[in-house]
Image (tube, rainbow, N blue to C red; front, side, top):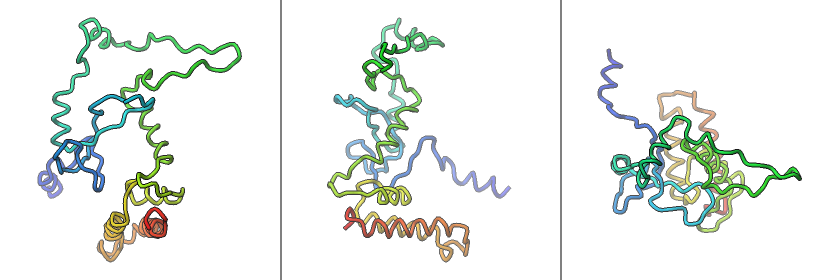
Length: 204
């Protein structure tokens, strides 16, 4: 009974697709709400042969985007009919290989159909380990691992580092959560990650 009552007091506490991030604002001009929901880019790829970069929107603006989104916009009636067929896309031919055993010219990223973002998600995950900071400061492999441990953005500064460290210590330290020592391993990882980044040239 008590648990049912507590659930009623917290309606819509979670929304499908929400990705919390410290300091990331909604991409809608003038909006100061957190950008926690991703949406397709407002414009094209600008010649980049890879998955298009997502925009991050607040709940209100992603709802507005979803309400106005039309997958079939610009299609003719015949094109809409073809896209709605159960086997749409499966009739495409497989790519041929040449006689020497090597593949022919690889397809462009835009040639792939990735409606569930399965390929794009893996691509972006790999690119995280290759991305560079905007200020040009170097990041070692240990620095990047520490950023992941603290869930910090690549371009975070020393202030953001200290703030995030304080938040996690308060969350995992036994003195702050009623003596619960079940998070000691995570706390140690947070401390080690903070020490790594505190002495990193990127946070000097």
